[in-house]
Amino acid sequence: MALEQLEHADDHMQECIDNCLEAAQVCEWCADACAEEGEGMARCIRLCRDVADIASLHARFMARNSGYHQELGELCADLCEECAEECEQHDHDHCQACAEILPKCAESCREMASA
Image (tube, helix red, strand yellow):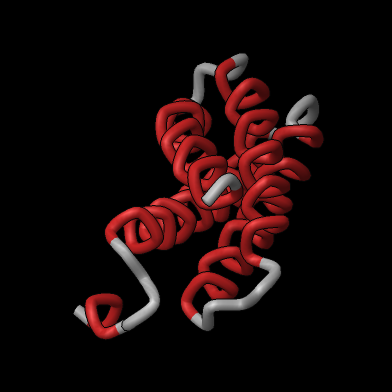
């Protein structure tokens, strides 16, 4: 795997990169599916789109060992937590998938932010 070649990335960083990429994927799916659900899903869509953007950016910042990845990790964790809370309120499979995956991402991002 290419991530194993990142000399600066320890196991925690590699796990966080993986979690961020998984969060971005599930949130893209959820936002798209929520758009098909109709009215009442605007907040879920917005939060999922925000998480998808920030999580993928955070993964890229970690991969290139940016000096700002810790600050971005804190923001990513906050967004993941807020989005997970929103998604928990909806019975759709895509929302429940977000609610399950996003707390793991938030936890690993908080770990990276405090490293």
